Length: 495
Image (cartoon, rainbow, N blue to C red; front, side, top):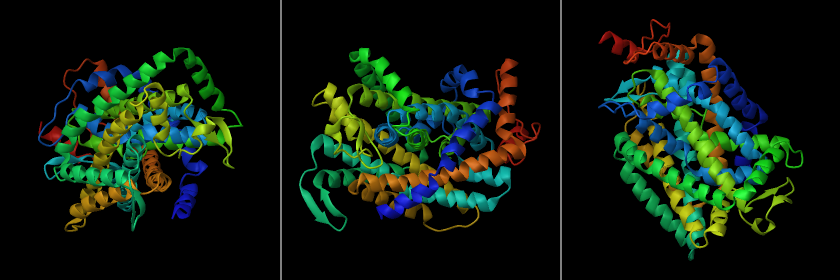
């Protein structure tokens, strides 16, 4: 199974996808005149505005829901894997893909807002919706929707669940070993699997509003606590900070660590973590109640900064400043780092736990396990919401009785399976899901840009109204030459 998964990933995550992610980010940065820099202050302002409604969630709730998908296992175990396989220089390329990807996040999230619909009393939208309406290619939209249901409903949840159980095993011990049909499982992993599945089932059967209420409280609190912990470690080891920056920059271009490996793993784990271009963010963006589509695009661009430049960087500095990492060559030999940690799986959160525990003995491992539980658990909720949205999209054409119920059971089964299997297999399956979605979505938004430039037109319209000092933003798609935005056209007609 692992051999098959590895072969598929070698095809999906070829150099072509790596440079597609970077190229799209650079292209959209140029076209929007680096909106991620120019309107940074506006992003902050928008977080304090906007209210929820009967049909949509608030701007901040939409940010929290998307962050619950972005801030997860990739921020802790993913960073360790990037360093382990690509060297410390991979962190630099994670920063690059975050900076450029913020513009991609703006484009895809603005599109999610422009082409959203009202379905059963709530807003729905995402790549499948804007691919059908802006590209006019329903078959392509269906491929994306089906791929996303499989990816977020079955492939990706296992990664989050595996990291929760792995972190718990490092903090508490594996416990007694039980032989089952899944193989040998520690009682800790088994207990975690049962607890997570039970809590997950309670929340996902409560709907998107319950998901939004849960994430808007948990995500900001845990992200802030984690970043503050990293800052404490950095302050305690401030003298080593220049050397860490030098190491990251030096290894980003050093042939010994593998120039291609640093770029490849930095982009791969960067996209996995911040999801810019992957097509997951637009689902939460479309659910927001905003006066203008560009507003939610800007908020989602800011979420990429929070994810990678703040949370991922926190993990990277924790690991590198304490020396709790290793980088291996293709033959498995040690290139950099601590030889005493060679037995640890780079795909697990163990490196971060050992790093924190070296500074706070007896506290570091449980703290990471606790933080990772909330990071990963809220990501599971975001995955369910994304999969549910794409099922709703398919239901517009074909009604499949019980499909939502089957999705919930499938996701819960995937969580249980991932919690008791190896980290390498779980990550391999997750990478397949991320890669397929990124291929489909990035190609889609680039084609849409050349067809009608709707996201760019929305940005220019918003900036014009902002410059004019308007107090009440409006959006008229027909005046801008944007076709297919029925929701916004109806909203304008109804006054």
